[in-house]
Image 1 (tube, rainbow, N blue to C red):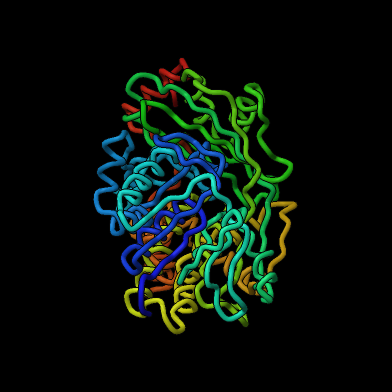
Image 2 (image 1 turned 30 degrees about the horizontal axis):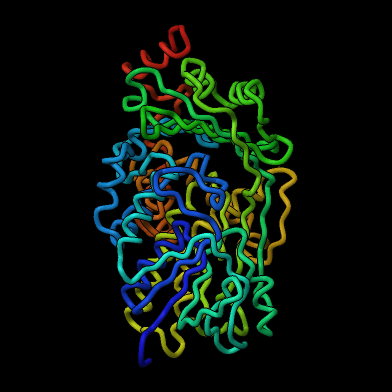
Length: 466
């Protein structure tokens, strides 16, 4: 291509900003268009409805962001985020029982979503090739079935060599593609009806830094609605407590309903912690949580000059904490294709395929887990969720039940769950050999608390903890 090259990114969320920082390496001008006014500080915004709930940035995603924006991890930690060793600094009740706290091989970044976003946003928008247009809505795509040549923004035609849709769950590709004369690609939907309820607390003195991250998950095998609870330390010596429940098991929005739901979890540790903490907010609820995937890479016809990324491509149930990490890995995949192929020829199709591969593991993990819950509504054609579902589930349950009691197997599954290794690595010979050995540690009937943590928990509940 000759002359100035331009890209337009629709959406200024995490996926859009990471895509913009990649594009700035390969084109002359990048414009980020967002319908909201982006906050100057770590504040929630309308365009990220899940932003008020617990977000887990796993090590696979954190490393990807650090590779794209060096120094981001340091900025997060300086602003009050905590780097949590998985599983050493975590107290996790899985569907199969309590996870042994083996020495950490991976990590997660624990803080609020607005703080995560702010550090990325500041770094991305400091790049002179990137321009932000706020309070600006995109109305459609320009071009024809062969190539997208730009985007219509508030009546203005903005030319671009590449348009990236990072508008999240509100993506309008299902309307925009037919307007270009193109069919909508295959779509799979998995909706367990999950609802999130979150409240922020002031952690008792010393506990935000000293107590592990707590997660109590449902047993998806028992035929009942799934009910989960997470206590996440965030900046400012606070706890973000997020409760979630699938259809017919949703948490309510009042203080009494929030407390009752916490008390009904599979273990009382979450209820005990919040009983001794000072509430700082009311209860915030969100329903926009269904998993949905647009299979752009399978489309018979896909125009050059258009990419879908982030939730616009694959929106994931947030309970698994994979959305942000998947977006980061998608951006890295995009960078690799553009570095090799540039913007010309069939680069768009190759980039979309690479992006799709990056999101495939978290998509199938979320979808295959959610379909286990009663009254889950599905529209799926992926054979992994239909004819192969039973066999895949049996293998997942075997490895899940063994890994919580096997150090080597736990390390392997943790690498996959943190998106630090592909799911196919669980079929490596060394991993299968560990699986055949069976559990290496005894079953835990109580949470694996250290003596100091038991004392802290006892302070919260007001009585000794067994």
